[in-house]
Amino acid sequence: MPKKPPRKPAKLTVSIHNLHTLRANSKRLTNIAKQIWIEEAVSDGRVQIILVDDGYIHELNKKFLHEDQPTDVIAFPIEQASRGFEGEIYISLDRVAENAAKYSLRSNEELCRVVAHALLHFLGYDDRTSAGKAEMTERENFYLKKLSSSSR
Image (cartoon, rainbow, N blue to C red; front, side, top):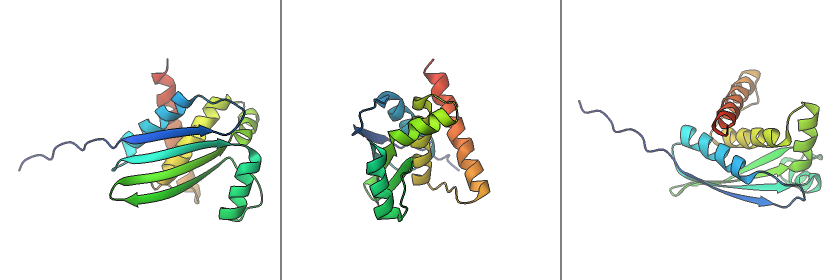
């Protein structure tokens, strides 16, 4: 019986829109997003990462998730049609900076973690149980370590 040819890696197009006054390392965000997508996805995709402040994400959280508070990240899958996946990731740079300080991390590391977290949700990971949360954290750590070692 002939062997199946290896699966062609899925491609990801990443667009980053910074609506905040704080700066972010767009190259690192793009790299971690593409790395996760290449290794985990089965179809091509397009993702927009929108960097916002607490007020902006608070309004999104209230309108779409009925939570009257800011949060660090909200991910919206837009389309999963024949042309591939599309999604939007909104990230509060205010929350990222606060969480980074709280956990003694660099802001860019925390920012990469929330991007990884959102992408893993797009790929079917779920953190509503303790086992699911542990699995997502393990995958986030795996990709953060991989990104860190590739940027040396």
